[in-house]
Image 1 (cartoon, rainbow over the protein chains, first blue to last red):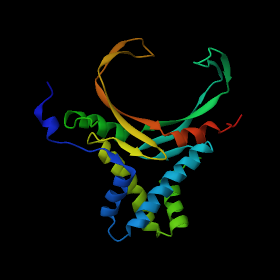
Image 2 (cartoon, rainbow over the protein chains, first blue to last red):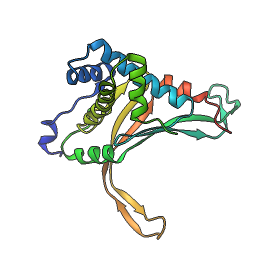
Image 3 (cartoon, rainbow over the protein chains, first blue to last red):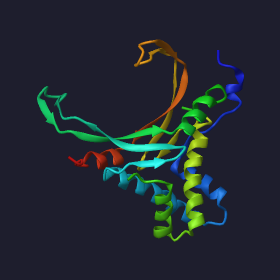
Length: 114
Length: 98
């Protein structure tokens, strides 16, 4: 039985638009439109970097890099036919120490929101 | 060379014309907000990029790979990242450096 206080400190899930609102609250001198553009610009820059094979390292937050998946023989689930699949790259995130520690320490206080 | 907060601030300065202080502050706040939410049990979904999720792991037996000594791995909460379709598709076509 989880302790009752789990339910008292409830966090919240966040989407891009909610993140934009939260950032705008912290920077009241900027028009909302600018905050929105800034968030889109940051996300686009991260996408661009990763898709050109560049790493991203944000101190205290974590790093993004690509992991290589070697070529393999797969199977078409419908026909059972073998298909050769070329090697590919997938994005990978490694949380930084501060994020890891904060999240781990929060587990006694906050329940994960679905 | 990896991209850092300074490169992102530079991008906001070049692309949006935020001044250097505003740009730096924006980058700090962006990652800080995501961390805050994750540290309160909230998951973060950035459409067009991916989703930061939380997972509670129970304790399991572990081993020191050097000495072979058995050490229990304690229960912990971890962050995982699942890239969105758009990012996955863009990265998949990256040809690599070889």
